Length: 249
Image (cartoon, rainbow, N blue to C red; front, top):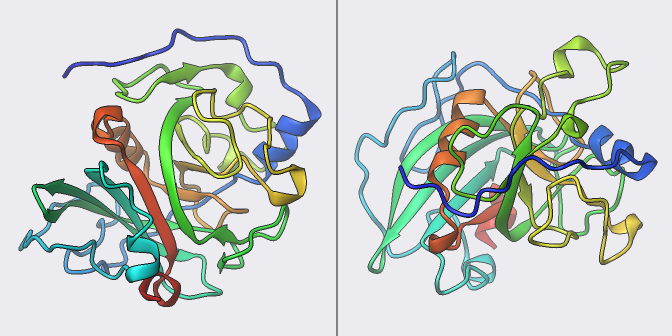
């Protein structure tokens, strides 16, 4: 597999602002729910499965006109996060690939989102994940680059504070920044918030620990490794995320 644009590890200052962002990113996993739009979900143990039918559609399933219209015309990879309910922390993540005018499901996994569910007006500390369409531009983590196509920053600064419960310590072994109130082209833990701190930030795809997050979307380790090796800047990947009702609107 060809690697593109991979950064060497860089030193990242740990500031009070970053630690607050990291605190908002703790996530969770679950044991094998089976529900995605025609694809099923990852079985317990982290081994994703491919779509049984893999029938393509002209639209990303379950996404209405409002959000579908925000998917960039040049995007050929969509990570769709289907929240089970407005106030639920349970979700399913499906990776879609567009070939020509057809979107096809590739992989799916059980996942978690914000502890209190979803919001269309995210604010710092609300424990809800933001509904919307966001680009995916940068990755990083505590562990060495697993072969990411996205620019990858390895740094110990990603490590969860050791005063957190042990179950959370590996949440940020791998992360992919969701470009919500952040500067693209910077490491995921860059503390700059263009819309101000009150609008939240530090929203990532990252590893599970068994429950909801403060705003991020959390997946099994195998899923994160797969996404890092598959999401390609040349295909302009985006995440489309929200509870099912808001996604359909």
